[in-house]
Amino acid sequence: MLKGAKLLNGDPIVVEQTRWKYMHVEASSQAGTMVHLFQHTYPDEPWPWSSQKKDRTVRPDFCLIRNFPLDSHGDDFKSMVLGLKFGGLGSVNSIDSVYLSMERAYQYAELLQVQKRLGDKAFELIPMNYFSNERIKLRVVEKVIPPQYQTTYPRVVKVGSAHAGRGKLRAFNESDMTDIEGVLALNTDYFTTEPFLDAAFEYRIQKIGDHYRCFVRKSDNWKQNVGNLEFEDYEVLPKHKLWADECAKMMGGLDIMALDVIVTKDGKEYVIEINDTAIGLMYPHDKEDLQHIKELVLLRMNQHFCPHLLNK
Image 1: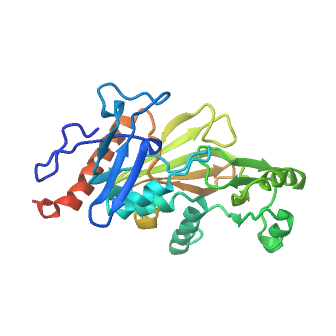
Image 2: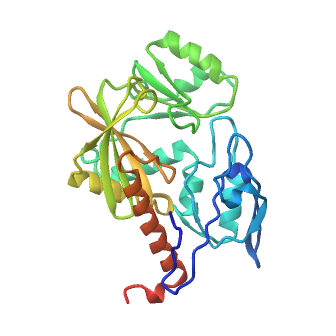
Image 3: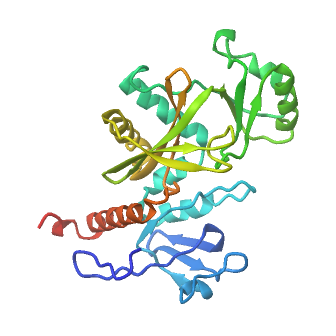
């Protein structure tokens, strides 16, 4: 994507691409961040002619982060993110936002602040309840919330900060919820509940720098983002740009982000979640969107390293 690219001062950009699990990070208050990158191994075969075929140590100047620092198998690369922050690296998205976006509950709390700024009607956010999980009788904890604010049935239960449809269950009644609580009692992940919406369809508002895109996602699965997916372009309205612009201010800045919105069969719209830098790109616009990411990275790098040459 950045092959042959240069900064405005003429410095060439050299790219080292890897995954979190193939990194070891060390940082010094005087020397900055050093990263040892391990050779990619099966099943993550290295790209032909790439440096991924060998171990190497680099001193990065800037980062483009496009992978979640958490995965669904319990791997937690938070220490890597902290190491990049310790060294003071510039990044897309900002390292602050990557760190804070590791927790879905924190993201929702930030969305609540957007709703307060724009108003309940202008930015309708799906109602949600949060529960810590201390391996005690969950039924007692749940009743702390006043009855009028408890999530009605059917409800969706989301566990921890899993993504891509994982950690998400439906409960149609108290019996279902009791079964789910029996599983939740085996770990300490927090969980949330929200109403299960009778969806007509779901669409995504995508923002990369100053470029906006909307598209509908259709699935044969109730989770809408797994299974056999089909995509259709969706008109970008002024309200979509407003929502994206306001949400892009969250958590230190979200240059790359997406909002997921459910449209119910009675025509109501609810924002259900925000996705940060690791968003997937929609075919057939993926090549165009990669170009938008390239332009964004070059802009942020020039602002970071040679701001005096901008606008000349």
